[in-house]
Length: 338
Image (cartoon, rainbow, N blue to C red):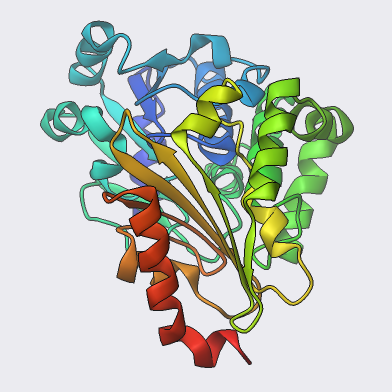
């Protein structure tokens, strides 16, 4: 983010504003952590702030401070649209194209507010007046910390802000094991702990609290695991019938794809989840080393993300999606069989 943008944002934030903060559709820990972290920061500065999520977020995030104030657009658009229309500033966090907001896109496109993007995904769109984009960052939460630092306000970080930002960094780095975790990431984490983030408690809330039905669904996912040893690839499938049998809730499959990647010799893993209501197969990709799942997702499954973590979707059946996946894998034999 260039110095001129910082000066203009600092000037805009020097007075009370109506501010809306928006994560992407299907928000994860980084999206909710970054929006809530920024929400608390701006509230402390005297602004009138609302977080509007395009749709519902996972239950395992519903302990974060301030989450009870998040508005859900698909449930209450009659309340949300006037807030968007009357906003002076709209922050968009953890995505870089308005298409990622689903049904909110039209309302956001028509908004007269000043848009500020904070995001760590590659190839940002140009809708924002001020863009803070850095694909080398571990997470949008780390970028929000750096944004606060650029505003010379790190001393304003409260335990609530620290908790939200720590949560997003932890989840988006796979508990600090992904390659995007830099020495600077650890410095930020150390400061957030010093400022009140209880790392043990946060980890417990995210990873050590599961319902019986979620564990049973994990068992089904592991039974469905398939491995292509030659191409060092593993994938999991979950049908709508299997999701329904175990009372699937949003977020229940978080982290399932990593079980495939944990297998010895595997460098590429995927999970394919059938969502008949949306009429799509939702896909998550993970990799180790240099295999670029962002490129793979963009090329074949209408998706994208990062080198080692990306998402995608398919509009054909689950069975046909798996056939397509297995048919394109040989194109990457040179990269996967090294």
